[in-house]
Length: 595
Image (cartoon, rainbow, N blue to C red; front, side, top):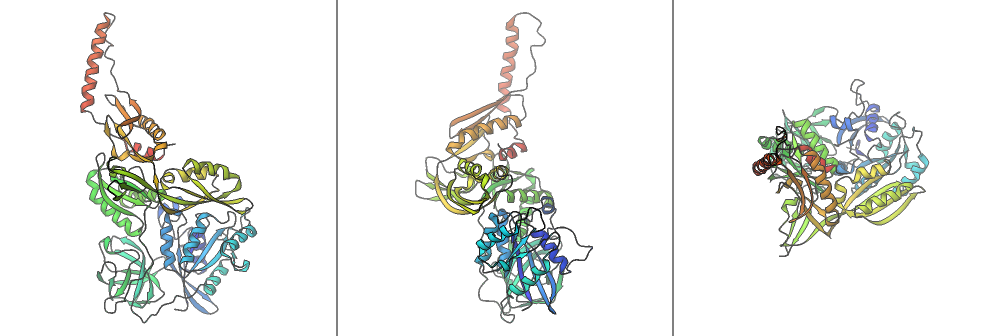
């Protein structure tokens, strides 16, 4: 056990984690030349296309140092704020972390939040300065930032370039010297923590675990703590590029278990595996259930696919434990699910994965956050969906979630960033200059304001030089109203939103204008209205397609023409009573991109 090292790589998005992992695998000889490719651990097509890591990936490497053979278990983690739950799980399975900082960009918001996650779990932090071969690198300045942040010695910081392979040996040496070996007793009862799982259509569910105490053998009868179910360990093994079966594994090891589990509800991330013959006393503490921030309805385009969509979401949930969902129905869209996501990118990725991995065509409604509605009776209910808002007569007040946002950027963009945050009802709480031209702004703002397009706007006004991270800071009372969109007097529940009263008029106006462009013309006039309660605040009309009925009247009395037009008008009126309006899928998507 003293020769095992478990460590993860944490960094802000695009600071070179996956490339560094590639070099480590290359230097330790884990990959043959044939298997070598860029971002080898990013196994999803989606990850490669977007150049981001979405899932944590575990892999085992063997390395010889001073005539001793060492086993290094590396977990590569995502860098985007929406996937910080993946990072927290990886950290729980490790004793050390490589904190990678880009030498040309310096410390970013996500670097700081990931560092705090690692420090909470008492991990040994090894700071690595990456991309020092770039012309824009500022190694000395960035080293000063790292020393300010974690209070280490200058000699503790390793300089490396993942692209050229410079400094990789030094990183491996530092991992062996500085990261402590796993603690645990191979002879005590088995305790293994599940930190991830994946569905395989031939073998059932494969759970990835880290053994804290005890030993597991192939064929053992094991029990899962949270569900209380018992299974035979058909196959156990370690994770290299492929799964490598082993006959026994003991404390400190990271690996996988296949026990022929078919239903996804029976495996929970954060659960503890123990032996039936010698069970441990208590499960491993560490994971709390994740709280989703953004809610949206996901509906099948074809109503018959409802059950199939449920199965697909369940399989996806195995691989992404931060996705939560419950059934709901809508008048406009039929049966579907209300899903909770960690952020907008997370929502987009889930949509893409449903399409690619399960061939599911889905419609996604307007995303919103969860509110607390206080009723006059004193009861408090959580509202995830605008249609779930109680009657205004019973409602006392609504509270919405607030966040503390940290934005790190260059000094020259401070004015534009402040304007954007104040527009979004933000309140400046702190402003700190980290160096002469890097500033950290701390704002308190409503979560609902950043759900739509905040991140995109922040990136464009700062020319990509702003990094953004946030954490929840409780609920505050808010002046919110429910904005409904009516088509021909009928409310389309999938388009209704809860919005701040000050923004309701302009938002309703823009929605009506946008829908007017998107809804195809019918044989009758379509009235598009935005309303708050019974008060209409905006209206647009999609004009009817009309035949020129007066074309055959040459000259003659005007009353003949008028009679024909009047007849046509009556027909249009009758048609409007029986006609119904189909809302195209593009209308639901357009709401997300209102600008």
